[in-house]
Structures are given as structure tokens and as C-alpha cells.
Amino acid sequence: MIFSTAQGLSAVALPLLALQAGYSAVMVGVLTALSAVAQLACRPFLGRVMRVVPDWTLLLCAAVCLALSSGIAAISAALVPFAVAQALQGVARACFWTGSQTHVVRGPGSSFGALALVNLHANGGALLGPLLAGFLSGRLSIVVALAVGAAISAAGIVPAVALDRLPPFAPRADRVARPRAWRRPGVDVGCWAGVSAGAWRGLMSSYVPVILVTAAYSETAIGVFVAVANGATLLGSGLSGRVRHRWLTAFYAFCTLATGIATIAVAVIVGAPVVVAAALLLAGLGAGGLQTIGPAIASDAVEPEERGDAITVSGTFRAAALFVAPLFVAGLVTVLPVAAALGAAGAAMLGPALASRRLHAHLRSEPIEETDGVR
Image (cartoon, rainbow, N blue to C red; front, side):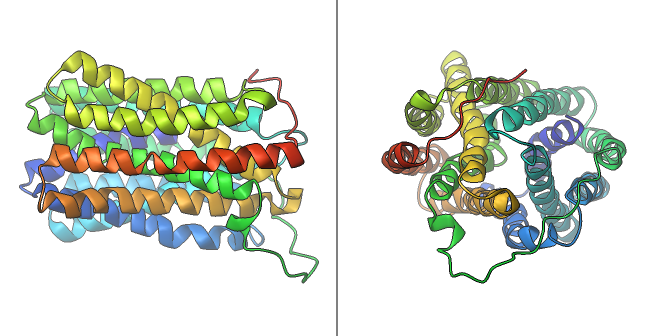
């Protein structure tokens, strides 16, 4: 809850600060992509890291890195400090999501309920953060908003230290050749879910605020719009914990299609506030569902001691999409209007829906244990 509040605040405040400092729309995309590069570079190593150190240390690292990120940006919006702030945010995201998701799936039974519960709290923070960013940026300044975000991030050290001291994952006992993790049945679908969720989060942290600024919405209105999307993400996470086995394929397809179609709608009808709010709500609902069921499907498809690896690889795909989506739009912006570029990204986000057939085949051969939902 604490981490996501701070991260949601910075996700709105950093692009606004970049625009205020005079960076172009292309530079906003490049700088946001730098955060994703740092996350992408960090993610592949975390599976091995968790075989050496306990998972709670990743959450401690996440709190420290995010506090430093917001603090540095609050001090200076010059290119080098701003780039460092974006990179630290990427490292913080990688450590937080890998550490938190791994920590909660290590109990018995299905991962769906556990991940839905932690995502409910995380998305609750993501709902509050943009509201704080919009309010503080509009009433005071963007710098004050980032300073508050740094303080909130630092407070996350306390619950990180208070987590159960679960041991590191055991080293692999066998040397039997296995397919690459992302090709294994179930894990592959979790990776594609991560692609859709990551692309949406990357756009929400970059070009969605940019296109809203272009449409002359105020900082407060932008904060409300982002909060609507994050509130829907909260709902999507909650619903995913109650989805039964027989509806999982349909739920995955719906979430993927909803995220892509709604992104296109925001780009095409950005001048209509009600339509924008409805589209962001639909996209957030889909992204929230994918954010939960993706790592859950991947985690339940492997042995208990491989769950950290499965969550790491699905998170790596999410981080890759977080990097590629803003960079893709940044490239298109050089030849197209921002709205057209964002719409093209939304169209590309429809592709992972094709993985629903693979999910259906996997569920028929390896049924996932039913969950009693979030309690």
C-alpha cells in the first residue's frame, strides 16, 4: 500500500515535471523508457538473487530506491539527475513486484487468492498516489508532490523489515535440461499477460498524461483521470481472485481486449471527458486482472521451489513491455500526432489476446486449483 501510493504519485508527477522543465514529448517517452530499461536489466537476475538472500530484502531495497528517485527529482529536473531518478524507479519496481509476489505465493494452495489480496492493497495505493500528485501539484508544486512521495517511500522501510523471514529458495537440485521458463506451458501465458499489463502501465506513466495535457486538462483533472484508471485496476485485481477455473480463459481474453481497445478510445476521443474516464476505467479493469492472473498462472504451472523463477520471468516480460510501449510511441511521435501514435500502441496491445487458446489448452491438461477468492 505504501510503496504503490508513492509510485502512483511519481508516475503522474515525473512526466508533469519533465514537461514543466521543457522536455519534448519524445524526451518524455525516452526518459520513461529509461526507467523500464533499468527494471528490465534488473529483473532477470532476481530469481538467482532470491536463492541467496530472502525475498523480504527486495522490498526493503524497493522502498529505499523509490525514496531516492523521488528525492533526486525533487531537487533537480536537469537531464542527468532526472535520468538517475527514472532508473532508480525502475529498480524499485523490479524489486517490489518480484519480492512481494514471490513472498505471498510461497504458501500452500493456489496463488490466485494470495496475489489478488496483495494486489488489492497495492492498487489501493496506486489509486491514492495520483490523487495526491494532482492535488499537491495543482495547489502547491510538482516539486512538493515529489518530496512528499519520497517521504512516503521511506516509510515503506518499516513494513518491509517486519515481513516474515522466509528462507531463500533452495538451489536447483537437478541438472536436467528444461525448456526456457517462458516457453513452458502456463508460464508462457503468464508472460503474455505481463506484456499487456506492462504496456498499459508504461503508457499510463508517459503518454497518457501527455495526451491529456495536450487536450488542455488541468493537473488536478489529470490526477483524477489516472486515479479512475487505478481504481479500476483495484477492481480488476479483486475480481481476478474470484474467477473460477472454467472462466479463466474468457477472463484473460476480456482483460487483454479491454486494455487495448480502451487505449485506442482514449487516443481517438481524448476531447470528451466522460469517454476518457470510461475508457480509462475499462483499461484499468483489464490491466488489474492481467496483473494478478499473469504471475498466478505462471506460478501455479511450476514446482514450489521454481515459483520465484516463474514470477521473475513473467515480470521480465512485463518490464520489457513497460520499456517498449513508451519507446514505440516516442518513435511514432516523430512522424505522427501523439493521439495517432497512442492509438497504434493500443492496437498492438490486442495481440496477446491470441494466447487465450494456449491458456485453454494448458488448463485442460494441467487444471489450476480453484480459489475461494479474496478473504
